[in-house]
Amino acid sequence: MSRKKIVAANWKMNLTQEEGNHLVQGILSGLPADVNCEVVIAAPFLFTAELVQHLKGTPVMPAAQNCYPAPSGAYTGEISADMLKKAGVKFCITGHSERRMVFHESNGFIKEKTEAILKAGMTPIFCCGESLEIREKNEQNSFVQKQLEESLFHFDGTVMRDIVIAYEPIWAIGTGVTASPEQAQEMHAFIRALLTDKYGQEVGNAVRILYGGSVKADNAEVLFNQPDVDGGLVGGASLDADNFLAIITAGN
Image 1 (tube, rainbow, N blue to C red):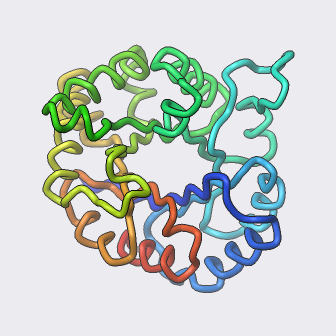
Image 2: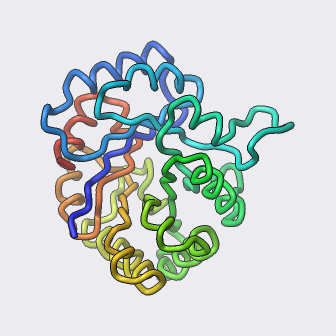
């Protein structure tokens, strides 16, 4: 089956509001008229309301980089999924390697966040992936399988088909090293096989799996042409309008 590609920008903790506004305008002004992929921008929380306003009436959808699983309460500094949904956010990233490593988020906590995102009516972009140490031991498949099993595989197939998965080899994030197209395809095919074994062929074919390891203008097309790569979660290259537009073109 044909899966619509997603090109998602993750700005991480970058840009002032002025710089963010300038970048959004640059992306919108250069967007192809016939854009066929889904384009998503995940900005820092501070920009959320403004980003939603900028993107109204355009094909680009606003996203959040994180949320807290509780609906409300004494969680100073946190933002709930319901708050994001009511602000107009469509997607929310969960399980990003930086949240796992820097903030020590467990598979169980990421499971709770994914549940909250779905309950609020947003689409989760669930990140999974291995470190260089794990890959050098050739344990990447079992590691990623455990992430999926402990955070996602309690959902039924109807819910699962609407979750977006992003495979991010940690050793290829911000290092300038990119997994080869063959390495990316191999892991994406493995993830799809796990989904198919668990949920059946229809769901396995429907779930979109993004690549999230140093996607750039000069490698996006060959990565996106792999049969099980359904677009990209783009970090550094999404901070430049021309580079991000080139990646969108590759996903078109």
